[in-house]
Image 1 (cartoon, rainbow, N blue to C red):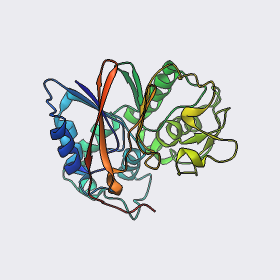
Image 2: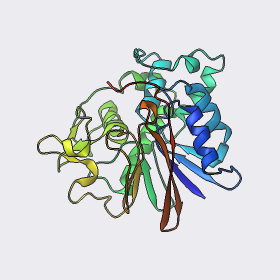
Image 3: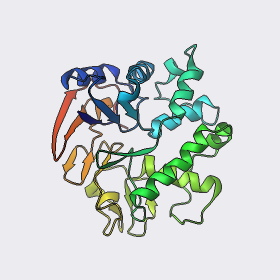
Length: 273
């Protein structure tokens, strides 16, 4: 069986309960974890150990918190007050964990689904999304990763143009794949608003509701948007159900045209805000 799992964020106990609840078997099943593997929860290192031990049975996407860990580890970003990354950063084998993490994908396509951490722009089709994700993946896996991570952050440029190049191009791709919630019909990002889909800024849409989105014919699964909650519609799965905030950790079993939602309750690790 194939399962999609939302943001774990270092809540390894919840992940273990969820895997037990679905009766997960690495020899039979496969999970796709939709990014934000670490941070804010109490067991970031244990989460990486659990997922890596599953080998090819687990496909783990990178989310914004995972990229933040990479940036901190390479000296391109300072740790935040609410970060819970110390167990990884202080581990004697930290370099091996950082290297493993930077070789994870930002997007993948499997079982008829496009999977990303946050979303896509309306101008991007599936092939474009995967190709652009690969550009960032190549930078993360290359010898200049430290330099790249030092210029990764920023809210500019806000709009996509195929001609944009260099650090600005990669930054925009990252902002879309790991941070997007709202954008305009022409794909201009709003990276400030974090409320639910009904609180879209004037002139903006939830990215998946933009009219004419080029990925509209492909089902998409994503996490990242805890204030959105579970969305389960034929063409869309939103699976960040706020585990780290005391919500639930969610998996969806894909079985042809059928699907089943499985959830476990989570202890609150941090308060929103």
